[in-house]
Structures are given as structure tokens and as C-alpha cells.
Length: 341
Image 1 (spheres, rainbow, N blue to C red):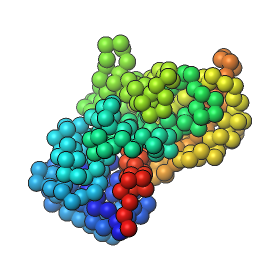
Image 2 (image 1 turned 90 degrees about the horizontal axis):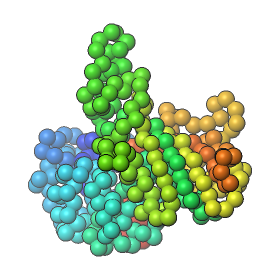
Image 3 (image 1 turned 120 degrees about the vertical axis):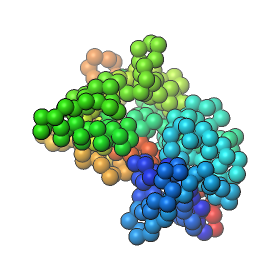
Image 4 (image 1 turned 30 degrees about the horizontal axis):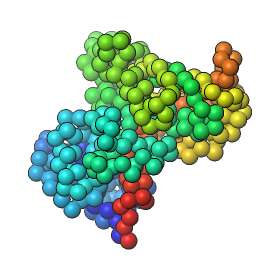
């Protein structure tokens, strides 16, 4: 027996990726529905590469009664309206927006990191998916934290434009084309030109000078991994279509060598270690696109602290940062709570 699964926001980048990954991983499904706003009603949606298609349904008229799992990729506004309705109808919501992440009654899950926390989903029938930049980072931090206990993390992110949705990807493409032909490259989605540039600003600014994206990395890491970890982040948008990169500096309570860190990461779930100290012996964003793994490279000791490690972390943000993690949560939910057959 399989599950009855709804993908909400099915016509967006993440929603389409959710459908693709459900098909790729052969998630046990008896029935699937694609749901989005009224603008997308009637559009034909592919169910991955299965050859199956479905008509997108209007969320305003969709009844969640009798459905097992709803994967939400619709943004905070629609989620605030429809996720509680789905949850009240008995359908477990796995939400990709930021709306419920810091709700104490909603578990924030990365399956390789804190699978046991999913047991708290029954309080609201809702599970939160973390921010894309947080998700890949904590996958890297978890096995090292288990071994040597992390005191402090300093991270700089290099985040692709797909993190800002289709409009962000379109803007990078259009600006790049315009620059080549000598036309103006005026910013619309972003605050400054993104083509051939980097922008040290993601999400809104807070009173302390940090951005909300940077705050999310701090707050979510504490909730998922350990509230005692000190973390500071600088989040930067870069002219890459898909794939987030992070330069991570980690300070530990216990001594750990680069060799031991490499050995730990090589065996850790969800991680692919590619770390040859030679030209090209590392992974870049274009190489991670379409892959399930979080890639780690450039592992080396930091001589400026008693026990420190630097590493480079790359992952497909539409996958591990969003759709893949949501599907993995659904798989975990099935194993622990919604067993069928």
C-alpha cells in the first residue's frame, strides 16, 4: 500500500522538483495531486519522468480530507491559510516556507541530523523544512559535532539565484544577455545587478545589521543541532543558477585533525567527500546540480584556533535545500509513524 500525496505549489521550481524526486525515489504513492493557485488551474504537470501527467487543481477548492501527506512549496502567505486546514483534515503538512520553522510546537527536520524530533509533529500535524542554506550546512556539521562538539561556526554563503525563485533565475539570464549586447541591466528582483556581480544581501535587514537569511541560519542551526552552538553568517547572492556553496569555519571543544574530519565526513549519511589537494579536486555548484548529496571539499585545519577546521560545502539548493529534504521527511514520517501495509 502507498500514500495519498498532495504537492502544493506544484507549478513552481520547488514544487516541480518535489514531483521529480518523489518519482526518482519511488516514494510509495497510491494517488498524487498537483495543487496551486487559481492562476495555474488546469495546467498539465509531469510526474517526474514516469510519463504520467496530471491537471493542476485550484487550492481554493481542494479538499485535504482523506489525503495522507501534503508537501507545501507555496510560500508563507498561502501556507498560513491552507496548511492549518490540511492539518485539521488529518493530512500531515511538510512545509518548505519559513512560516513554522521557529514554532516550538512544529519540528524542524533534517533527516540525517535530527530524525527523532519528527515525533513531535502530532502537536500541529505540521513539520517544517529548514532554510536551504541551513539544511546543507547542518548535514556537514552533525557528524563532526558528534565527535568533537562544536563551539562556534563562521560561515559565508554563496547562494544561487534559484533560491529567489523563477524570477531570480530569469533576471540573471536576462541581465547576462543584455550586458553582452550592450543593453541596460536594470535590477528588478534583486537590489543590485546580479549578472557578473555578487550581492551581500539576502532577505530583509534586521536592526542589528544582519539580514533575515543570516538570522535564519543561526536560529535554525540552534533548533536542529544544538542551542549552545555559536554561529555567525554572511549570506551572499551570486550569479549561479542552481547550487549553493558555503565556506565554513568550525571551532571545536575537542581536538580533531583534518584527516579525522575527512574520515568522519566520508562515512556520514548524505555526504559525498571530494577532497583532492590538486587542481579540480573539489566540487563546484555546476557539478552538484541534480544530485542528492551534500558535497564537502577543501577540508583543512585552521591554525588560528586551538581546534579548528575549514571546509567547503556545496549542494543543489532545489534538492537538499528544499524538495529532497521534504521528500526525505515524508519517507521518515512513513517509517516512524504512517506505516502502510
